[in-house]
Length: 338
Image (cartoon, rainbow, N blue to C red):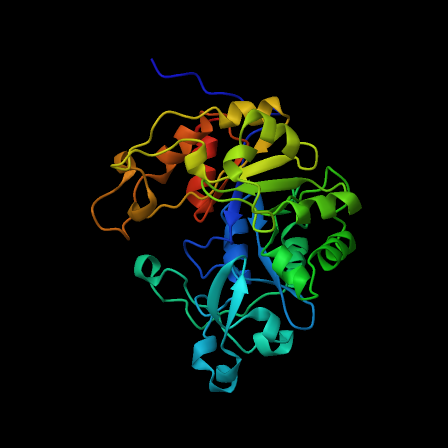
């Protein structure tokens, strides 16, 4: 007999967070990807935020932008290519902090994983500012009883602070300007780092999410590890400054050597005991990313049964999930009656 589904922390249906927008169908972190995610029923859209040289928050997966824009095709920017030390790693390419917003607006987005998703939309869409994303939400939420929320991630906040471009002030100022105030606001602020979240908590009561990966730890504090943070004692410490965790989904249900789903870990139960919500990442429909049982064939770019994978995680009591494919994720949540 299958185990009975576990309820969410507050008994409400799990939320679907559009990971970088509907990034399974449009180049990630574009207004077009966010608009499609809203159309497909996402509860929240997720922009990763980095800064320009003139201090503007823009949406990119990383501050190094050669993977997600056509910057390498612009000879006028060839001399901007550099190698930098980011979170303990040497990274080569072009970096947002070396461009003004006006210069970045000359670039166009491209698909980050073209072997799985193709390039049909490359070169069509601009890099959006966080303000433009919030404008999109204002327009989309007119007349909605339940507004679509925003779920920004501060990317490499310790690094950006070290070069005089901290996230906190511009992020909180924009959220306040657009009416995101108080714990009931449809917003979560997330980070893999701890100091950044604590700095935001000192200035704001907006909901915060501590991101966690299966290995490593916060970039700004090598003495910490996510594995320790995910223990009952670690989760209690997280609850002192955050409202939830965003773990790698393998921390909730690990996979075996052949890609089969294992038994759930106690992470959701332990997080709920500490009063923390759990929003794992990332759910994608391509066979390449799916558990063995849910693959739809041997073509890595083919689509399998994302709904079946999502349902397995919903049964653990997760409070939400990040997906590149909000249409399928929303359908899975609704069909599960959660």
